[in-house]
Image (tube, rainbow, N blue to C red):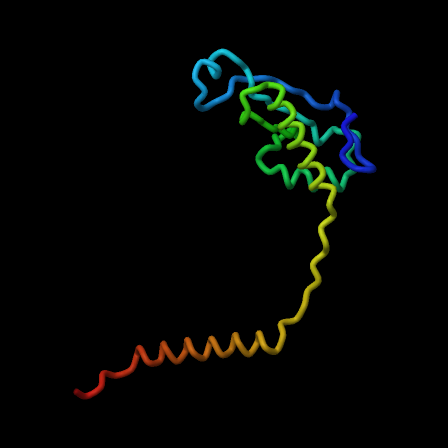
Length: 140
């Protein structure tokens, strides 16, 4: 079990890992070894995620989430497969932790008197500039 916070734990069997060859420079190592890790976690069908966390996680994941609701995380920055596995798992845990934070609701407020006056002052100045542009040419 991977502990996310006090109420959420994820079973390691829910995470699927596959190893692929890393892209980019690295010489012979890149061509021979499959060190990049592709971690898959089914957000839509995970029984351990509360519904509110699942919705926020889907939003946070963005394009890393497939149409089927599977989160795909790729880690290939290290030369070691083990380090890339740990990195991918840390990314997953961090993403889920960020999804557990409930956003503070925004309270609508009225603009202050000062901000209203500044806005009107700016409009007056702009209006004056535009009026001066369209005037008749002066006598030389």
